[in-house]
Image 1 (cartoon, helix red, strand yellow):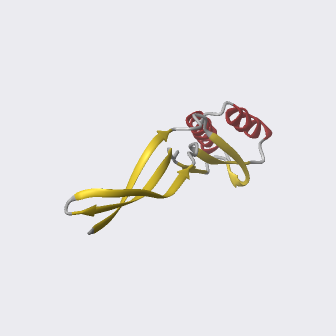
Image 2 (cartoon, rainbow, N blue to C red):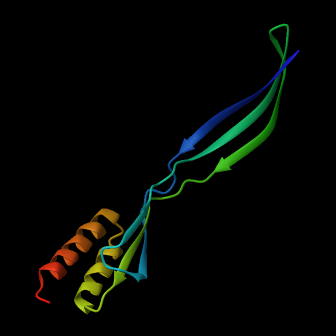
Length: 116
């Protein structure tokens, strides 16, 4: 008699298609922390018993569900310049991480070019 545990993933799904953006008032504009998206799926685990190479029984012993998660960014908004803050908050409101990065890069470049 041979006993095997067989794991099978099924129903792979992407779930949420949006991006999650968190304004971080403790980090300066230009600071980003990005977590990639994860697909969700369901999995089953079976106990399969073979005798003389022939399957004689199959029993489901576990079912698991793993949730999907969206691409998530923590975006720095700390600045003493109200115009920069408002532009960054407007970028966050678009829901696009890539756009937030572009606006932050623009603000950082402007700040670096400004006379001290």
